[in-house]
Length: 131
Length: 108
Image (tube, rainbow over all chains, first blue to last red; front, side, top):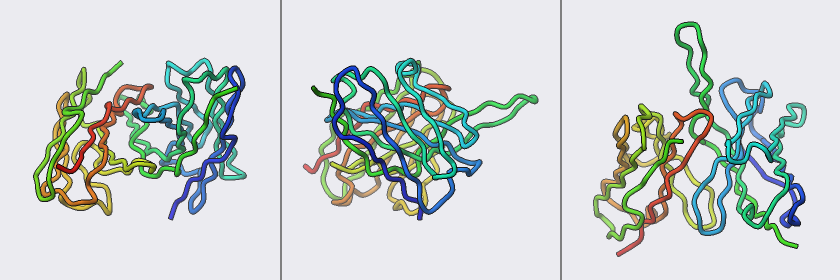
């Protein structure tokens, strides 16, 4: 059974960088059929996709966060990581790591990447931005 | 950006009721839609993907339909464990994946 587990500080100061790691067990992060992503949820609010990474290292970010986000993968450790810079109180949220289906397709000789639904989620970790 | 609007935002129903939640997209997204259930303090759980495909292990009382801009999630006979918040998610708008605002389903 695949399991994902987030780890990292639960408290980050404003203007600093939030860093989280997701450790994947029960399966390989190098699978060619999946993306690995981060999704967050501010307290009492809805879900926001932050970004995703393919096993090859290709990254895709939410345009609204792109300037502050870096997602990387370490296949040797079966982990992927999130860095979010210049955080403010608005970045306080539960952060989930997730496995997302690869629903990309090719037509007319051109292939289109498409990040799909989340079939496995981490339990989530609350990160509070406060001085 | 493609916006998703769920209706209603809040729904009160009784055990045994049939309920339907609607998700409307601001532009066509083919069948690139998923539905999730989230209970308090827990991660969301995938129910339906590709608009109408039931995720393995999900009870058959859940069903999804629709394509283009209008989609529905139906629970045929509510069970006590179904009271939760439900989210739709669109996958068609590369590179931005978006979620609906959620529908909170509570016991009447």
